[in-house]
Image 1 (cartoon, rainbow, N blue to C red):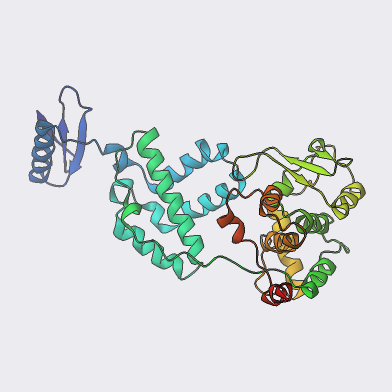
Image 2 (cartoon, rainbow, N blue to C red):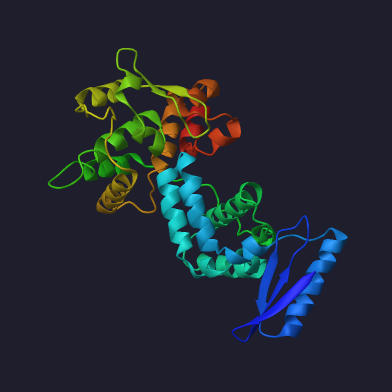
Length: 327
């Protein structure tokens, strides 16, 4: 049975019923409060009532920040995800409560972001939002629909095919040569990336205890696809590792992700390279390795790819080179 009381020129409606949490809502007029109470009681009578009080009280910002506190620390990409999610929590859309977070508002956010960042970034942000809302529904008992599911995603960007030419590689290696106050770890990271095709996260996670210079191997116990793998090291890679100082932490490269990222971007600019990302070093390395390891099973064992389709995304042979091989 609903009860009504007036407080500060507003009407509060309260519904108490066995088997349901108390429902309370405030209105400007008693007629609105009565209308809401009849609607809720009707849904309870039909067994269709869904408690949305938590969704009404919780803003998207609060949800994102709770996710950052409780869920993100368990992920491999905790540092990157935390920074990206906190940036999303500062956007105007984060002011809306979950109950008022409609597909129309998500679509407006998508369109605004597409003016500022790439399609890939927007797709990633929409995926973040969808995952966070689904987690709240499953794990935190917040009854709210997921409006992201009804929003059209931007077209996926074409896979990158950028790799270094021989001349560009010389320029980049010259640009990462440590001088003055430049970071001393950038060049060895870049060289090892070109020699092993390791991902940036794998390079930064390398520890001396997992490297065997005698057998020319480096163990990666925790990779992107969740499967440990052992990477063979070239003679150049071994010589590079032998020359590095040992850090008390046990890390091969005691440098933070964003410090390396900033240093690499500055080097790319100094080298005069257009549209070149750190991950493109992996494309360059795999393409070079394919000439030495034409057996795809052997090549995938080095790169860590589980399917030929994924490996093909990173192998970019020169058409001229293929023509010469045909004779």
